[in-house]
Length: 271
Image (tube, rainbow, N blue to C red; front, side, top):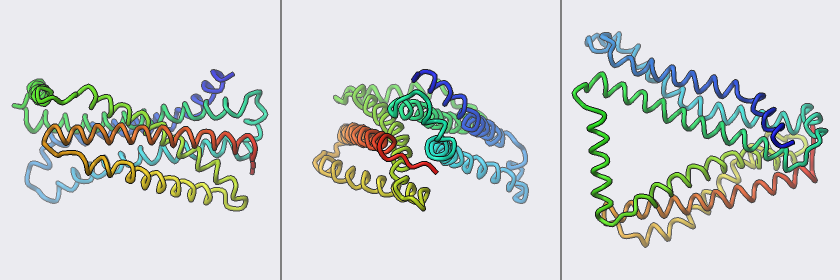
């Protein structure tokens, strides 16, 4: 049943996030093409406005994909669980765990794909800028220089594998945590009978504030005791912070999941 729920949820969600990410990549290409346009190089200041507007559009598109997909996923979760559509959802022969896991998995994948899309769009924009404005610079030579720098750092005793693993772990944990922040706050907001949406928004900011405070309390002692002997000290500090943030995200995500499941199973309040 879980597989069917995931498949159905994917089909119901994929169009809007995919369109937003696709539009962002197209805009990134258009923004990158401005670097070969003779208009902004001509020195005609009035015509340079067009290039600036394209760059502003690209910047706003990055924000739009990030915030737009989160908002869409939140609305979709709320509608499918706590509105008229929720009556149909909760009549399915599935447990509360299955319902939540199917929605959480699909939401997490799309949040991750949004991050990948934003990263790729920035690479496209930056890569086209280097290609058109600095054609004498070789991307391969740049990569070799970066590798040599990392090798030099590694020769100083830094465990780069641990550092890279900490980044990957934090990214995965923060992506899941982002999903659970949405689902947990919406489930908690249903306890406010007459103002469920406002309750969900308030719960989201409250949870986010508490997590940030706890994160600062946990990370600050470690930051203070780290010796900043560049580059080793800096990278060791960052790796330690990333591991700590990842663990905190995991703990918060687990807590929010069981809290959400409890509200769905015991305190379901449909509009």
